[in-house]
Length: 593
Image (cartoon, rainbow, N blue to C red; front, side, top):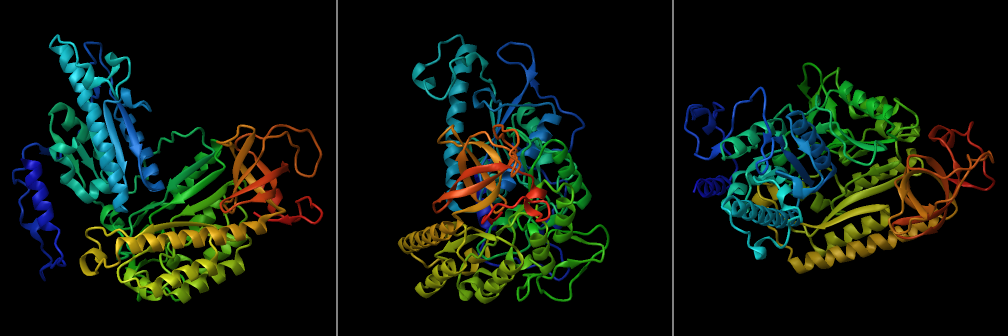
């Protein structure tokens, strides 16, 4: 069939040889006429001015088609799902959290590691099975027959009359971009595929799928799409915390990473739209924003003309870029953006993820250290402790440069806490390289670490040019040693937290015990404490129960590797806690963020 032919073509196009572009710059696509016939059953439509997603349900009057989004992977996918939610609602559809009521089921996927894709395949298999049961039920009724109870006994609600007759399944995100038309093969049961830059086209694609009963795909990557004009629909409990996407794509081309191939080149949102979005969030009660980007601190909004830098020097000293960056005297870089966002409200916490170590200039480090509401928890992905492995990974720095950056941060950022990403078993990693990574873990003493075995991804430099030569059993053993080292060092470090005071943003009740509350400090320490009435810090005034969204001072009375336990001291404000002139002093207290 068409899907099979497209899959074979895709595999043939994925070769181990670099792409060669003729001297005149023309490629195959330049010689293909726009009038060439498209494969039957696979459509990319021109934009339509309006859409009608009202369909009859079991002979009833027309009702809005309901959509359900399942999100896997990183926080960028969460943010993207909020954008998709907004686009589909504006197109006339209705969101539902109830899978049983959804006529459109969208899975926003991750492709960063093989295990992430396996989870998607398992979920698609389940959703396809669910749809077959629905179809059997409704087709049986249409023919005047009784549905087979063995077919429909699992996976459907009791009130089968209200399940949609026509269910469509779509795959979004990085896996959609990586596999493209392979996902449309019949056995997967996928009706539409949309890459991260094609979400505006979803109403169009769904029109094709419903009206023409065709499969639809749009995986075109964009050089300028940021969705800056779309207000995301945030579906959390309230607006206490929010993720704000400030840029998309990545130019780093680390040898192991699929992101540049699934997310495209870096492009930054206009700074004013970001500041306006954060200001609206604050007006609605938001207390904490996290600025998002694949390489968030390389944010570089240039409103006019730009030119390439004269060299590949990165913003961090002794780090280099994989390619020359664009520069302009009118550029708004990440430091300027964080300065503007954090100035909106001194009571608003500002976090950011995920940064690259190469993009930490001194002025950004100084700003984090001097601005109390810019959180002192920094994610600093090391990936390896071996300079040789880092070179193979094309990370743009050495072990020594990384450690000097850590030293600079600790010098200028009070109460700094660090998190990291580590990959074990990368191509050519020796036992000596692995020991260097363990020693880095001991030297830096991270507060949080995301640790993984290397998983080869197609299209990447490592997949094409390097040999995945570390046996799986060795990868597993090294991962276990890394995890053990991390928890040992983290537990030892957290023991030093005893007696310290933290300003904690209350997130709600503890999952394990309703009589306790949980929150996080500015340094991203998770702290659990009793839910008891308390008074304003140092005043002895009227007491009340802490609520979600309150800032409270908590003294640490117990520690573990990842969680702290505390006792309530009193209510406070961000400004009052961090400014010595206005902060009540507690005798012999050790203040921390």
